[in-house]
Image 1: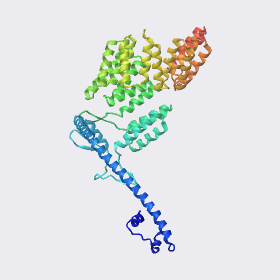
Image 2: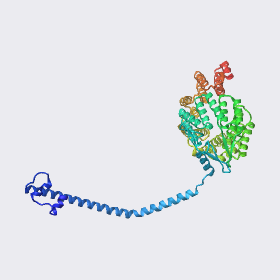
Image 3: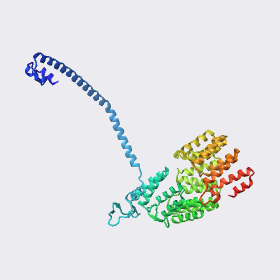
Image 4: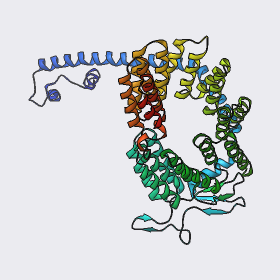
Length: 516
């Protein structure tokens, strides 16, 4: 382009002396220079045409962009108005948000490692050791760690345990104990892992170590911190549940009483004590009623809100033990007033209404739970059973509910047992047998599944198969310390086996089974 401009302005001459501009070689003749000039002129013309076309396209783009901007100006104004409206609504929502001062203070105390008294004084949970400076030795911080760090470890450990990753959960709980030996949550988590592995001796040692080392404190609604009068009530109640599970009922009762004495407002201890006395000790409804009334009174005395857990367990006892439907319904309503989303209260209320053939009310209860707890397999199972019992019930609806429950929890032996019994009632024996067999595979220690399978084989005319099923169930469900009978969990299996032998006219064998 530069050469063409020079040629058009006369900057290039046709003399041979300027021929060296086009090359480093020797001078050329006049004809060669003329030919070269012609070529350069053609190249220059093409370059001018291309540059003019490029300029035209740029002008068109600029014009179109100006038109677009002029067209989009109203849209930008509208967007600005919309943004202003959104900002105003957000600011209005922010003004309407209510901050919970008690929750804010609790979070601040855990983050900064101190707690405040009602008078405004600070009391540090951490040991600052001296003039307020945290000291180190060998790269390790001396004194107690912030509570929020132990909270984080226990939170993640609980998640690992919930997903069945026992080894990962154990490592996190051990780190939490190393960080804060006074925190009882890690000891409780280790005991649950040991119970999953059926190592009850190690679970007992973990709970006893936690009772010896941990320290708990109760915070009143006014902010005052109240210490317990005894050991950690949560670990005492957990140890009582462990002793009850292995059959040490007297020791379990003593631990529940000790937990209630340590903290009278500990609702779980009173509920466990009431259920132990009414279910295992076969005491009357009055014994359980005393425990529930005491729990209600102690919660009021401590200034704590009423517990839906207490009212739900109390209502179930009144219905099953005293057969007082009116009082049970009143207690269920109290539980739902405390917690409108209490799944256990809605479930047991629905089951009671279904037993009394109040089908519409029972359906309303189950549907209410499934609005906020859609993955509750127990509610789906109860709903399916209600649908199978009602006169105008639909078998297809019941089967769909059973399938939904199994989709939520495929390893729920209770759902598999109920589903199998319903299918057997419809006449499909093979499917019922497959479901019961699957139930014994997913949970070998679920005695009702073994019993239902043995009874099914008995009714199908297979006594030898039924005997084998009962024997395998007793071996699988036997409790440690239960002797030759296998403990209380095997009682239903021995009873069903005795009925089988009596039906086969093997009376001596039936007496042995009933005697176990």
